[in-house]
Amino acid sequence: MAVNTGPWPTLPVVPDPRAEAVLSSGLIEELAYVLGGPFHFLLPDAFDTNLRALREALSEAGVDGVVYFAKKANKAALWIERSAEGGAGVDIASVGELRETLGHGVRGEDIVVTGPAKDPALLALAVRHGALIAVDALDELDALITAVRTGRVRRARLLLRCLPPAQPHSRFGMNETELATALDRCVRAGDAVRMEGFSFHLSGYAIQPRADLAGQLVDLCLKARALGLEADRVSIGGGLAVSYTDAESWRAFLDGQNSDHYHAGRTFRTADFYPYHSPHAGAGALRTLLATRPEGYGQSLAGLLRDSGVTLLMEPGRALLDRAGATVFRIQGVKDRAGYQLLTVDGTSLSLSEQWFNSEYLPDPYLLPMNDDADTGVWPAAVGAATCLESDMLTWRKIPFTRRPRAGDLLVYPNTAGYQMDSNESAFHDLALPPKVVIDRTDRDRPRWRLDRHFT
Image (cartoon, rainbow, N blue to C red; front, side, top):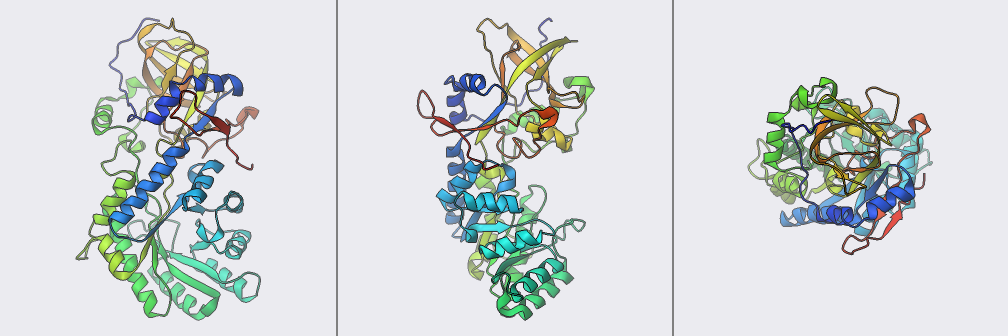
């Protein structure tokens, strides 16, 4: 196949010294040989850095806050261990997640339980360990009160989850009428419950709507206190964006990409993609949120929180996992097509989950050639999976590699720890799930590694 010079849209990731140190160490090639299949590698120092940055943003604003890691973002035990070591909490939504979190050292009182229509076994276990429960509906509140009064569990700690007015069709949370009823029932429940405040979750990453709703919930806390309830916490959920690339690269990609750049002429709308660049990301997004003035208020959200004595809770997943890991596949087949190549790797797109949301994981993967004699130039290639499904593509986009991909070469997809690695993994075709490798040291010629200690 002749070299095709494009133009081909690219989306380079922002520089990441930790990952680059691993890629240049020779460890990835060795692990690929030892493990004999696709794998993920995890970088615990990145998690610690991200957690520290969020806390610094809270401290700079003079706001009391608690960070809970959203466990659904990645199943690795490592992140629970880092949360326990760093004094962060964990956000869970199932009995399995709760047991895993307790088993890896997080105290029950540092766990928040979210999700709709929670299983009675989950509620009972959560209350028994003193976890904070975001109550999603009136019947769930009634179940908690009944369980405590019948003596099966101790006093329940809870938040009342609000239905965002901006998302009235959401299946999560309680509307204004239901919240009023819930507050009345909390008052009547007496010592059976400890109502600590309110929570919400907004889809998307817009700052102003999140600040507006947080301000309204601060007011709700004040009203709840007038009823004799504790109500000194507001949880804003997640929604802190991650920037995978720089603004110029993201703009150029969106302006340049079209169906000719994708295998089989696949088309994507801009709205289909995650916003791979955001002007406000991670701790920067939190700083901007705290500095934003909610509509109808005369001061910033940080000022409202300080003056009312309300603690800000948050449950980031992706933002804590930014640059905290990558995913490695081996190329096991190459086909030449008209003007590009079609690669097949030894795994599935279930280990690169964006495809299963009718989207595309866009950051450019790295090609690690196994031979130094690979042809150089521009070699566009789409990437398919080792299954019998036509739609099982890791990357529909024709990626412009600068060396010719060959069977045996490795592809490294960067920054996949946040939701990409395992939110949709499945042992389809009886293929083994890719293991997770923890790389504890990247500041040395030969990084140290171990397998993650996930119980299941």
